[in-house]
Image (cartoon, rainbow, N blue to C red; front, side):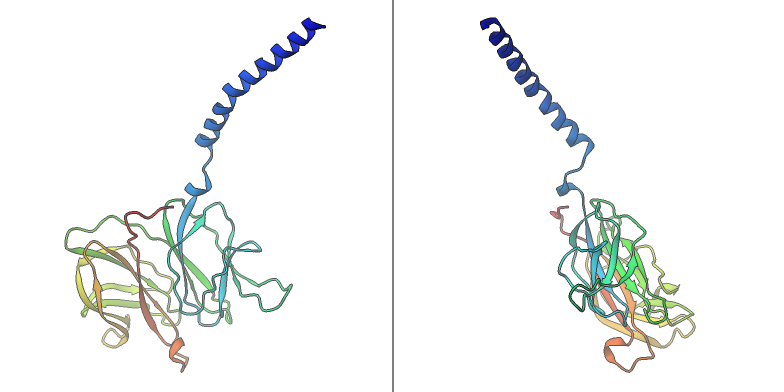
Length: 251
């Protein structure tokens, strides 16, 4: 009986030793093959440029990503989002208890961890032109004394497209609805930024005055609105997003 107990004790001790040796290996393997939630994030901005969808929220299927609500023509700040949360959807704000918010748009692109993105909602729900543009907000650092800009056209009812000028010098030409340019370098300084119809380049649709492009910074300039409305909040507009994040930004 004593020998049997001794044998059982030896087996138990052996299993303990094996467990101590194997568990760190399994843990190490998990770290190498998986990505912890703290490393699986992107940065994300939502810009609601659609005049008629009313306030919207970001969902993963039926689950809200946060309590944040995005109204026209608001822009959020960069926030963290887990790239594994798919599919991302834009839904209207729930108007009644136990009523599922309507899914307006589903993103067919995946986010990439460690990358900042902007989601532009544009077009109209009423005529089924509602759509989106998803941009990756990364570019190389501009040369000393220069900044970078790009242009996203969110105006849907100017068929000729838009030109964008800096102090009356064309930076981008004939950019169609949903068009997104590449980043280009410009001299850092203060500018009057104009958007004009490509077929009527002498008449500014909207002007952003005395906008300062800082040395070493990158910006997205975007247009939005419609001309058929008499409301100031739904007329043509122009705004900017600073895409250069602080050097200590984490994901």
